[in-house]
Length: 250
Ligand SMILES: NC(=O)c1ccc[n+]([C@@H]2O[C@H](COP(=O)([O-])OP(=O)(O)OC[C@H]3O[C@@H](n4cnc5c(N)ncnc54)[C@H](OP(=O)(O)O)[C@@H]3O)[C@@H](O)[C@H]2O)c1
Image (tube, rainbow, N blue to C red):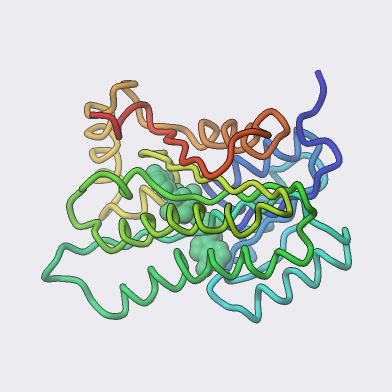
């Protein structure tokens, strides 16, 4: 079968774990050269050992413009261009109104909003005309869940960024689409629980609420990311694709 991303150069931020790692495996299997980022070098090294194909890990914090400059310098030197930017790195912190702290608001907006903005803006000189930008939002952007308001606000902003950038980049034929995952079993989601027993309880509870009857796997997102990044999605632009087993709809 033809590889859907053959010859493409892709960047996946937050590619060392969870959804990003699953996407990196799929992108590489579909023939792309893949750059992954994360803050922890050890996790990046582990991820590289799990991905078959052309993969390069660059330790970079998306909330640091200087790190992003260094990242794009490396990509420019190694490949000279980019075709796909999957701005996926994000953090989850919880807090109900009344318990919200300034530090948590700053961290969430720094990574989940500012990080996405400059990941995309600084990629533009390298990004080929006709390229694809994917952004990771969340089901919580359109559904109220307890103690999630600030995280949800960061993810809701992704939707607006995608619409605006689609218009800004139309002359370059660059498509911008958003994926809104539901509950996907990743270290990031489970890390939001107090311990492993609480994490399993949370996943079991989510499964009862999701029409598909199960929590998602990282590969559920990766398959959609490959599609949106590929020519098969050439007429999909500015869309927000829920990948949530139907949870947003109930
Ligand atoms: N899992 C879900 O149910 C779910 C649902 C909706 C949306 N999402 C979104 O999906 C994305 C991925 O989440 P996940 O569940 O796969 O989480 P994860 O397992 O924690 O993976 C997050 C990845 O992002 C990296 N990262 C975090 N902060 C970063 C930063 N400042 N700069 C660079 N890399 C950073 C992490 O590496 P380091 O920690 O080493 O930096 C890791 O590679 C996030 O945007 C999240 O909000 C997840």
